Image (tube, rainbow, N blue to C red):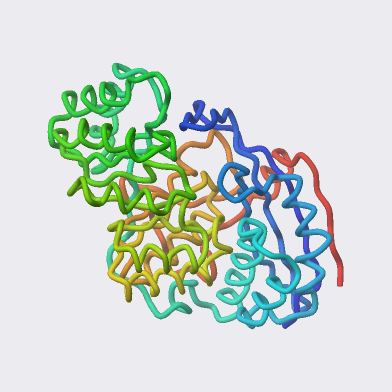
Length: 370
């Protein structure tokens, strides 16, 4: 079995409502859907959702990297030779985690379909329970968030993830309003997305939030301020999570050495797909850090890939792959029965892609042939 053709589709996926984080507001999400075909007729799907604020990749740049460098490097290879494929990808381009993730995911999808097994089975098997997600909440007015929190409780969510880090001084009031609205019925975790900037500001914010019983605090300071996490660790017993600060195994090694966080948020888009994230989850386990698989608001394609990874690794304790719940329309069909996600025994990703919807959302498309 050899990869014989690739189709790269840049799509624009509409959101049900704007998604607001500390550094941007999104009305829709650009995504790249990669279709890999083999010489024996199998079709596998991968996805890339680049974010210039995190990995430095852009949608058009990712398309170009796939078209001119990464896909030509792996055409003619067996998609099941995933280690050799990553070696080729890394020889072609340094970094480019989101672009490489699309190739990695599509190869795992093909490998699962060739074997007639779901991806989690190829990774060693799955835990018995279905994965679940938190309700991810944008940066909005406190009263709006309070209403959304009550609605989330009624819909069956057990966890809320609140995006914070804006410069309007209302972060504490946002959490206060949500906690008052739901009591302690739901757990609350917060994510500043680097928005609090420096350790001094983050320290003040963390102390102000501690009375509200926060599960953990994600990326409170700038991504490259590794030393700042050590300062925060000295001043709080709150659980700290690094996200944007952890892209590759070298980043993770520094946090293991420093013992400055309790958890790390791994994302397929940051690190290059299922394969490197599985390795990093084991690295974190050996270093005593728990792992969450996070989201860049991917469609069902990459979201399913993240869930297969999470189900297969005992050190992954949380998943936040909620993208499909936020889209008005998307090409995949991953099923959510809140707060759980229905990962089945179907081969590969277990996701069907509606080619009509894919075509409707496509902004541009190109093919690369062997």
